[in-house]
Image (cartoon, rainbow, N blue to C red):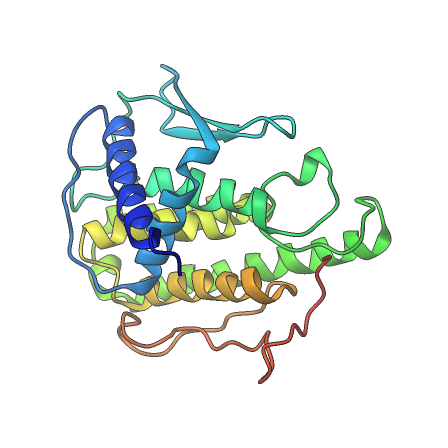
Length: 267
C-alpha cells in the first residue's frame, strides 16, 4: 500500500458523511455501531467512487437517481434534499442507503462488470459474455442470471416469517417484501443495490442480524466473489444461523483453490 492510502481512505469517508448529509437535507444521520464487514465494504466502495459522479439537486420528490452519461463524462446522481427519509428505527429508505444504492452499487457496477458496450447494459450487475449484445450466448446468460437473482430474492421473502422481530411488525414485513418486489422487477440492475439499501435500513433499526439480514449479506457476498473472479450469478439457498457479522453467510464456490475463475465473463 502507498503511504497516503490510509489518509485517502479517511478523507473519502469524510466526503461520504458530507454527501449523506446533503442527500438528507443537511440533517445528520443517526450513527449506529456495527461490526458488519459487508457494511464497511459497501461504505468504503461508495466513498471511493464519490468523485467519479456529478451530484445535482432535483426537486422531484425522488430520493436519488443514478443516470448514465456518454463515455468520457462523469455519470450523474440527482437527489431531492427534501425527500422524507425514514426516521431511525422506522421502515423505509435511509439517506446512507440511498447513497450506497446509487454510487456504491450502480456506479460501481457500471465500472466493474464485463459485457458488451451497449447503452441498455449500463450499470448491469452481472458479467455477460462476448462483444455482441444480441448474441444467443449473451441472451441465454442474461436469462439464466436474472432468473437466479429472482430465486435468490425469493429466499429473502421466505426468510421474513422466520425473522420474528420483522414478522411481528406488519410495517417492516411490508417494507421488506416491497423491496424484494423492487429487486425482482429489475434484477439486472437491482440485485446488489437493493440488498445494500435494505441492509442499511435494517441496521438502523437493529434488525439486521436475523434470517432476513443473513440472506441479504449472502447476496452481497456472492456478488463480491464475482467482482473478483467473474462468472455468472450463483444460486443462494436458505442461510443457516442467527448472525452473519462474524462468519461468512456465503461460501465461495465460484473460485477454485487457486482462485481461478470457474464461470464465464468477458475479459
